[in-house]
Length: 577
Image (cartoon, rainbow, N blue to C red; front, side, top):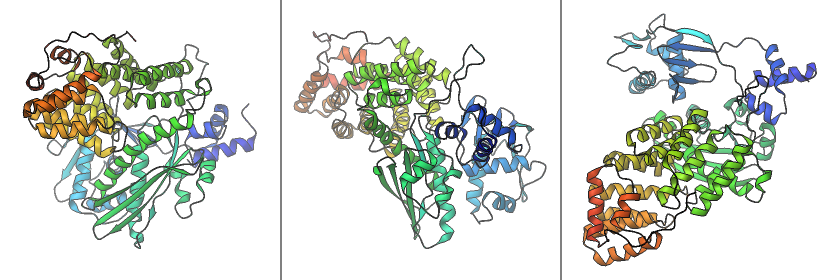
């Protein structure tokens, strides 16, 4: 049944105004596919296009840049600059043209303008030396000189599950957490600061939208709340969301303070709140940095909130997305039983939706964690195959690529694992755990300084996440390999407060061995054996993955100085799981 003419026109207005995306229309407004198809036929043709050049596709409707099969992260302003240059490629574009088109006539520094042009070049595989696509014309401006083909934009659509029956279409899952980011409030007297605040809001929506486990309402749907903010329950009912992000910005004397909070609309309770203080050196860099940090902190908090919301509900009454989030919350506990229960929930999720990539990725993840923490034995080939299946099902899911990085790690393919972790970060630049895993891989490959920087970034993005203490242990390993044993002990001990596994105790044992603290080393060796009764040099060689020979030598040398035995007479009763 398509619906009455009035219903079709209502659907058409809903779609054309972009108050919410088509997925939200279907899920929260009970519109059928037939009705939306009829609605589209009533709408005027869109001006949106796909711009093809070299290996790139710029989709102005989705505001997405792709290079080959990969999605390229682009700041909103850089995206607008690219579109303007391409659409005006028949002429040289002046600085004034760009200021008017991209910055709405506002004055910006020469360095800011140049940095945005360079960012546009990097995004499309160009650079300032080659200027293959974006060419600087001395004392005049810049021009896009690549060959461009135009095609129609891809219409917003719901992901569907492929079937051998061409008439069968399965709707996208409706039960993933839904979020609306409300316009942030300007707490300064200067109305001129609105553009900066709008940029924060837009960048945050973009950052959250990269997290495929969330459904984020489009910005146009929340603009109505810029001047007048009703009760969050009313907003939830209007937009069909479960969570709302709101915040304020106060700018004064070269500094900015941004406060943000995440609210559960069903209860009105605060799920998370944080304040960010920064110096205003580069206003656009600050926008991007703050948006990533807020998104990075919201992600784990929202996962916990979803677990708390559904933990009393029997699994048979949960949808695939809810089962996935409950499973991920159990994996985050870093326990043998939690991982096993998580896999049971995730398999139930896959029974509801067999091609659900995040569930496949999470199962691979839990198996890799079992191996890493020595909880159970799994075949590394099975982990790798499961992760590869997740990537094949959804190449744009960051979790799937990070699970692939884990699988490649246990298959002893460090360079490919590093590439997979970098791909996860490219897809979701707020994914703190991806930075930590990348840091671990770099450190175990002997690139300790690089790895430490990545782990520090993970901590900055998500300092209060359940995994944050684990990030400290990544840092501890890096400092141990660099010879800063005291720093390694300090960080590993701090990580033990919520990450009490054999690995940090083993790192402390080695570091204290190098420091000559035999009493402390023996105590830590006993703590390690509490977790791993078979703790020995041979066990570390077998179970602790280190790719760089010099790093492994230093780790084992410290353990030998601490008096750790070469072999253990104890065998753990692991079972195949």
